[in-house]
Image 1 (tube, rainbow, N blue to C red):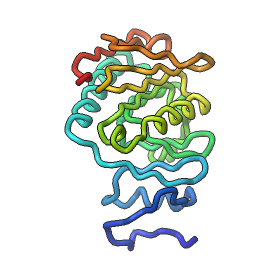
Image 2: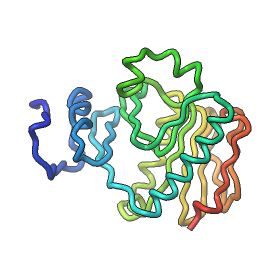
Image 3: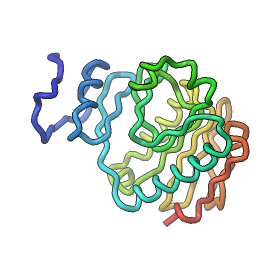
Length: 202
């Protein structure tokens, strides 16, 4: 397959299940006109729809809450949904919100920090959007959370605002499903962090 270059003119139509090499993914991700991209471990390219108003506002609130806690504690680095991480299995994933312990982050080289960091976050949040429900991507998100755990993530939250449910993913434990929880605890991964959910639920 020929390498994809920046000379391609938008709009770009990508068929379902389209596969690219990691190198081609890196080139595609540099094209500013494209939506958010991910690459599975089988090199299947995933193009995610731009965020709508409600989902964007919810994501922003998540960033703020985690960011405030992180600034106060100085325990790590927090990232937004535009950050792509290269997981140990080779997938390139972009959680809605993520966090990495400072000692693990500092093990990366300056070049690795500036590019797509080759590291799995310690903590991730995936927020189910209306487009995810419309396009029946919920099971894909559940599989994505399992993939995170298999690649080193310690704690993951899958938040579904419309049904007011949260799935909590922990290493070596079954998925815990909470119905209409008021708060979520960062447990030992994010000591002292508590996320209020009142503004996230529709």
